[in-house]
Amino acid sequence: MCYIEEIDGPANAEKYCDKDKTNFPCAEGKGYYGRGPIQLTGNLNYGLCGRELNENLLASPEKVAQDPVLAFKTAFWFWTTNVRQNFNQGFGATIRAVNGIECSGGNSATVAKRIEYYRDYCGKLGVEPGENLSC
Image (cartoon, rainbow, N blue to C red; front, side, top):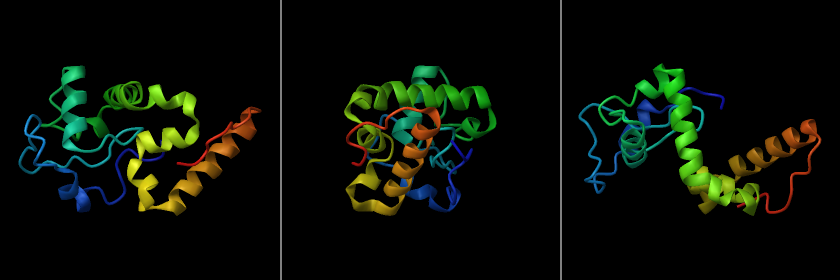
């Protein structure tokens, strides 16, 4: 929830177009890199989310960064669709649901930083962070 668009997103746009997802084809010249509070990523997520919200996000993925209400709708969609069912399994399951690649050895330093932030926020709120903090 720090950036409206993924850092270096446009430079990495190609890697987020999965041509095997033929139900949600990538539009010419569009990038499906992370945008919004939870950084909606990939043509599959843009397509599924757009269908659910009745927005053609495949044709206009940039709308997620331009419209704050739409941005939070996409975050809410992603959370309820992909994260909520894992919430009772600990913070590690949340990391896995949001950024699974980090849990597969993609970036252990980032995982450690997320856990550090989570513990800090829990401390400020006066709540216990619970078990299973890492993925």
